[in-house]
Image 1 (tube, helix red, strand yellow):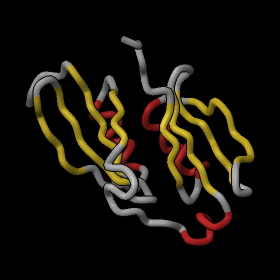
Image 2: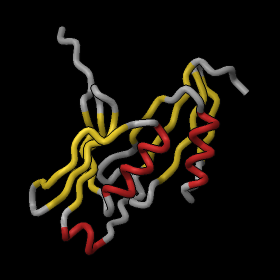
Image 3: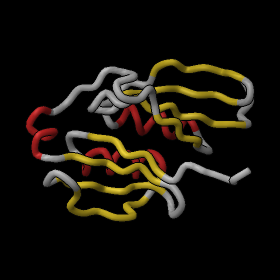
Image 4: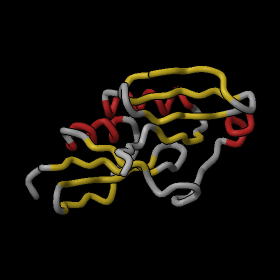
Length: 130
């Protein structure tokens, strides 16, 4: 058996800098790399030293300002945090709307859509059920 772990997810967004700024603010991540990419595009890698989200765009994406439907092409990105309430406060401050709050074994969670309709699930494990 191989000990595998997810290194990154690559998603298309209309404004990588705006998305990177949000993820840095919400999760305390940093920009690992930024530069030109395929199809005259631009990509920002934002995350930790071991894992990250690649935020990609190109001129066609920027011109279209895409709004993707849930599940097209992905359902959501899940992120664990140590303080769910603090992250939710930042989501609201960014003008985004948390929803789907749930207490479940083994923690609590909520969801939000970013400006590109990419859904994020934010989870705090080990938190007492409310």
